Image (tube, rainbow, N blue to C red; front, side, top):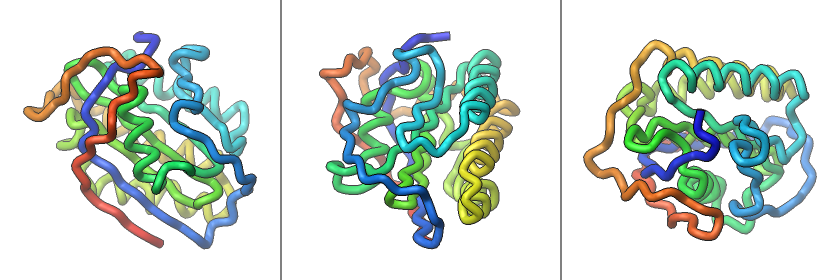
Length: 208
């Protein structure tokens, strides 16, 4: 199990805005560089800066993702923040964070970032190029709409985050993720002071 995400090209993103959901909101601007990388902090997968997840949920998330990573090397980072400013948009924040951490294995681009911005009521899922074929737009949007947002609308943030992550894990567990994109960026390791500029290929955006 690698201790730090390796650098990948970002190829996909799904953005959902659900303004009717009542998140607990506390304004706290944060930069990408200030978000603790759980792989470096305690060798886990979850960073809950918005404080919307229980300890037991974090334990379950970490176990699910660790089991997945041990099986086929896929990586999922789950991050909550209260807001994504000073980034221009939640998508820009997620894109930069994905690249800054380099989520996924070197040479496989098999990483996923599940970002929840509580103050902006947005869920963003960013995917690496190596899993684009098994997690296309329609499938990712379906996971968010059926597994995450219905629970979030009931203020069940633990349940929605667990269900969404489990759905992603189930897809990745049944597929060997080892494809490498023809357009992969150089795969030099990232250090905190050398975050790459975002370079996504836009896929789909859905607003509620």
